[in-house]
Image (tube, rainbow, N blue to C red; front, top):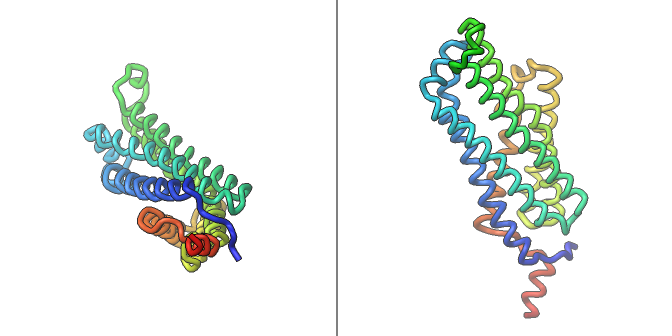
Length: 243
């Protein structure tokens, strides 16, 4: 029987986690698919360079979205720690630290992208290189930003797996949702490591299938926390009945 109670700090943290999760999700989707995606032409460094130079504000706005996403991830990690620490403080801290590492990977990506923008600039020291070489180097830097995500993905998956397990133990959210989270997050960890070891793994399992179940779980939990809050435990219900 679950005997832990929900205090006001946990209820407040649940609302913060819900808002942070939804805002961060919206930012990363908008930045990646609406702002950055249209500028990057697969296997064409020259066209990608021209697009970036022609839409520098759009490119920089995408990077700002990524930085804001990292901030949101830190806020979310903190809020989840407050909620889940009463269940198991060690595991809650582990999950928060894993999520923090993942957030840091989203700060490395903008650095790489800004380096690409610098390579495409008009600084005098760049004139010793041919334009096509600079374009190729810039494209490599942008590609490195995507690598940063897949290096950070195992940490995100581990954080989500730990949190999903604590959600399951706490019964703060529906049990079925927690079980889905444990399975989907653990799947992401396995796929992330497989992809890092075997680069062609994404030809067997599509990249989007790596993290889609986990992302769906995190999105649903954010909505649940924002609009439903933490599910009352048996001790909470008993206390309310006495009152």
